[in-house]
Amino acid sequence: MSSTLPRPTLNPLEKHRLGKQFGQEVPEFADYHQKKKDVFELSLKVGSVLGLVAGVPAYQKSYQPLTGIFVAAMGFLAGQSFVKHVAGRAYGLNPLNDAEYERAFNLWVYYEHNPHRKQQDLPVHTMEARYQQSLAEFREKHKNEYQKFLTQQQQ
Image 1: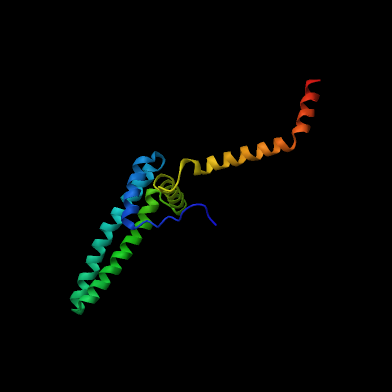
Image 2: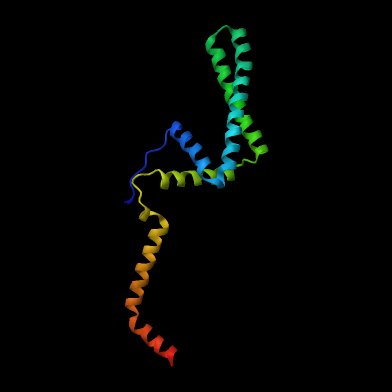
């Protein structure tokens, strides 16, 4: 059983707010965060324009509002996806960098914004505590051999 409390998933608004804060507080990822933000904003603009350009003629041809809305939504999604892939490559965004950014963001959120975590629970501190404990056990177990080794070294 895990010793940590489960963390609820972030809703999109929280993730957006924390993403902006992460981009400002972590200098290693500030440029990448800005690039992601620029590509996202561009994809929304292009998707909106493409949705309108595709949706209005579809509505005018069919005179059915649902057809126009559906075509506009599909145009928006297609335009947004296209810009994310094409402009993302031009800006230097790729799946490997995205995965690294998401990993760093998730770690940052977990350790900075989880009230149940304490400084002692950080992996570095728990690893150090385990190391010191095993070293003390080893020294106690091999105390006599260590004393013999020291006397041999002094002679």
